[in-house]
Length: 306
Length: 297
Picture 1: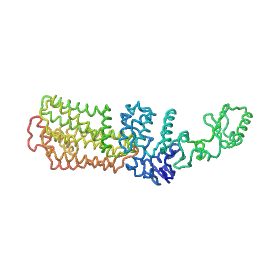
Picture 2: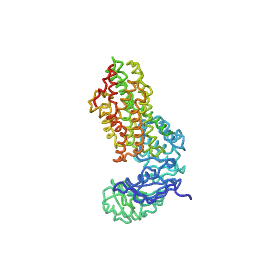
Picture 3: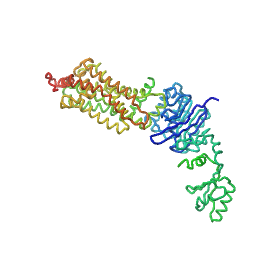
Picture 4: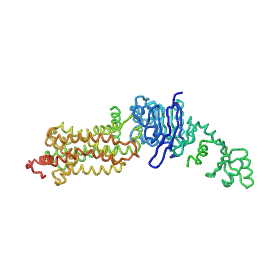
């Protein structure tokens, strides 16, 4: 097996007194979709921007396609494609112009017309960038990132701020790229995105990789708790529900009680008995296998949305 | 080079779709043309070349304003960082700014000449080679100065404040609006340190005096050196990222752009005859011969 196409070892980065990265390490194999999952401020964008050659690292070793992103010469730029988190194009540039212009910068390039077709932008080819919707702008960004047939594609929060329908459109595009065995490094704070799209995930928090593996491995590695979501006719205290049999943790949010149980049948039986004894009753009950959100919660004690 | 040309073509398209650009690059200079020539040269065709020299200088100097604001806006909006991912260097980005501006300014200059000839009955074209050289070097120099301003400012607001100060000095102290000989002597001396003064007097010399390029050697050299220096420094100081703030060292380097004009200003103050020739050209507009050595030192 050949070496990793992306290698990151003990990467550090500070912004003044703030330590954004505290020794991040991971490797990505060719053809893999690798996700950096974590809350805002975890260090995902700093990591990916160092790998794209946009930021200098303070310490550690990084390589992309065997090249050093800390010296991002033309050869390096020929190999990568990127959808940046904070970027734009001039308002009055037409969609087709933008694609043709970026294509012209590369030695290896795809036909802009075929990319327009593939990303559903054919009808918008003469539209100004400022007149595109958020989803169309993101599809254009994806099309532009592929214009040079990159060996490695960096997608930094590609669906952030998009509505669910557009997000699903972007997911299907990324899934297509996955079928083509394109190497992708994706950052996200959406659990669904990481679970659905990534072959492997590194969970990042406060500048550190706290665990990594396939989504399935990570969920299996969690403490083996099952998540039970319930609604009650009358409010109950979290503390009372924590006393039920098999309950490892319980917290309430917006009237929904999320109970983490190690022994689901016993927990449900004792819950029903407790509610009957207190004149309360169940409105709804859902049982779910642990998600990456649960893994994150278990490892950090915080929610991804905190 | 190929990247610079691709960017130049795109930037020309963008500029032509921008109403502000059309107004400030085409309509605004023509307003100046009709104002200056209509008010001061309507019944005196001898004054047309002199007034046209001023209008040409204003048209050429305008390059620095738009380019600096555009570059800073691109940086603030995160547009430059998208280009940074691609194999495009600062040289191509900056060269395309200057080249597109140059190509788009030439038609305005041509229209100004045609109007001066047809509407205001200008009898002579002046020294065409000298005019072309001054237009070319002037646009490149002032555009490069704009890029330096973009390099040493952190926001559009800051850029506009500096532009406003410089533009006012260029417009009112260089002889572009108020003829240099009409200014108080101390202001005339101050004007000797402004790049704009050399552009204005250069145009006056080749249009009114119809002198050859060799007679405006100092102006040409100062503009060329400044253009080269400003382009070189703006490449060194180029910032792709909105959060990359400019340091004091960069501001000092940026200020080095005016060194050729400081040296020329010092030389003109002691040895030169720019004010005398400016007066000669000014008086010739009224058909008068200047008294020898009439310019107070």
